[in-house]
Image (tube, rainbow, N blue to C red; front, top):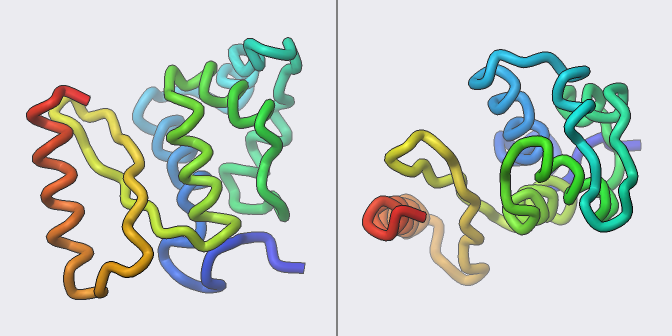
Length: 136
């Protein structure tokens, strides 16, 4: 059974997992510390550190339930929509670009389905410019 979504073997098939790994490294925290904060604000359900560890390692075999994404977003101070877009990229093969803001935070931007491959870099550059100007 494949453990990743997207196009198997593609560099972009682990976007949510990579986002979590990058967050842990950038904030110099351990998975257990992140798990202690990972509580879904709507249901009160808590993420276990083992699941977060499996996600970060790219070993979660199916897209996370919405409550898991909300809990993870709460722990990371991120918008649930961003994590949902990254999950769609990882498990459904939807193309999402991570765009950096001036403050170092990243946001996810869905790449239009019919955009020619030669235009993707230009689209990402424009999205980054907009994010910087809007302070998004």
